[in-house]
Image (cartoon, rainbow, N blue to C red; front, side, top):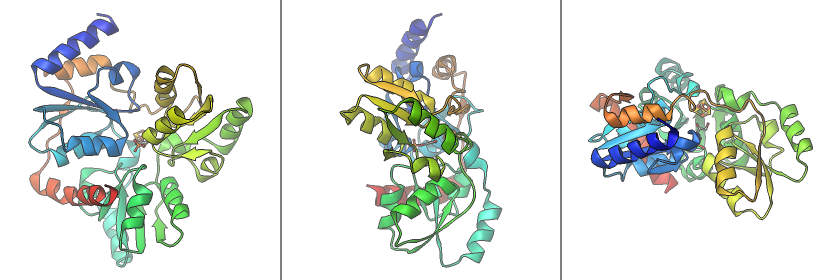
Amino acid sequence: MNIQEMQSKILKLKKENDICILAHSYQRREIVEIADFTGDSYALAKKAQTVENKTVIMCGVRFMAETVKILSPEKNVILSNSDAGCPMAEQMDVELIEELKASNKEYAVVAYINTTAELKTICDVCVTSSSAVKIVSSMPENNILFIPDINLGTYIKNQLPNKNIKLVHGGCPTHAKITVNEAKKAVKAHPDAELLVHPECLPEVAELADYIGSTSGIMEYAKKSTKKEFIIGTENSIAEHLQYECPDKRFYPMSKDLVCNNMKLTTLADVLLCCQGTGGEEIVMDENMRLKAKRCIDKMIEYGG
Ligand code: 13P
Ligand code: SF4
């Protein structure tokens, strides 16, 4: 079977079996093409609330499928490839955060959405990269303990100097490994290009950027800009998708190492197996845990709008 034949089969099965396919923007091109909805983590979480289909296949990583289940418990939620996790989401456990909470009683705990459902049960508010600054600035609390991404945390702290934000060391191994020298090398190689960077990158890299934002933010910025060339400082699939969407512009990856192996794990063949009912992993969640984890996602949507 070739790619087109497989895509046609998926589109047919999707209709017959009342399936909605949600894909994060880091997914492979051939998956984005057959998805019902593609976006950043905030857009996917919001979409999860309104999906009407019986089954949702999440092409992304585990915390994204968990978020769909938390918001739509009546749905059959399938993670497209059960090995696709986000290493950052696994970096901190409940014991560590309980300890931090005990020694920082006057702090509200704000968690990046890239955390496990279990961890969300003991956090106060969730944020995504596109909504973080708006949400933290809307919170009545002044003392914030932000977990687990120190780079996103530093970005929020710089934007909101009036808040007292305490950070914990964690982050995305893919974005954080790109050095300032690599970023400078890309800028030197493409002097006419604008540098667009995800806030999960090191602060020294973000400092060089013309724009800092989420995956969707970067895409929107590049599409609207009158500039013709862009260096993309996030997972390399964003440069690829943009090149398809704006063929008259040029998109260069900031580094060839900006590849999230977990996001790239899902193949079109995995999606076909999910549509046939023989692939992926159904997300099953204890109802008590779901309700507790839902509180901080509800707060995110309340503050984030
Ligand atoms: P976005 O919220 O920008 O989609 O980011 C999710 C993510 O995992 C980035 O590495
Ligand atoms: Fe997690 Fe980083 Fe991959 Fe995003 S790019 S899913 S934060 S490992």
